[in-house]
Length: 216
Image (cartoon, helix red, strand yellow):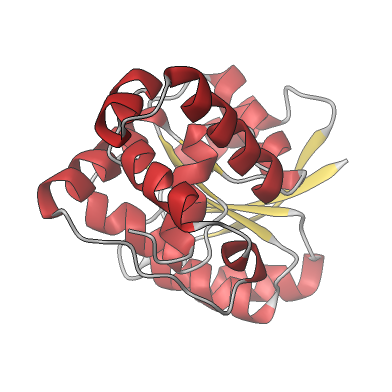
């Protein structure tokens, strides 16, 4: 059973989310918080597997909430559920330790799958949030800065870093191959190797990893 705490200052929204999540027999909503302090107290009291948090509660910053929860309860997974697609907010939330960033327009099946995926230890990002970050990176054209304290970053080669940079910018394999003067097959193989090294499944999870490790 995946135990979930909801953190949102709109009770109607939380009631709807609870109804959706508990439509799946493997998920149970065990608590509701209207602010970060309540969320922290429930984490202490209930030790949930996942906390689903709005990034823009009326008196609190959801990104800060994610950081406070992860700093104190590292095993609890935090999913930001919001209507905000601003790239700076997304990047900040992920750097604060959020394990997922999803938009409130997702359908019920996607929400359930997100909770299950994050509970398994994988990171998830909504496709529109992914595009927002990609556009932000492309417009700012900043080079990647590596956080060497992360052992997973240390196993990535310079060539792989370059390819990750292009992926974050939203480029397809064909475009990356043309830019780096490699074959499309070579690029595909390198990307598969990156996924295997980092234990990731797709490009969206790679973007989440890149944000958390200061590649953006």
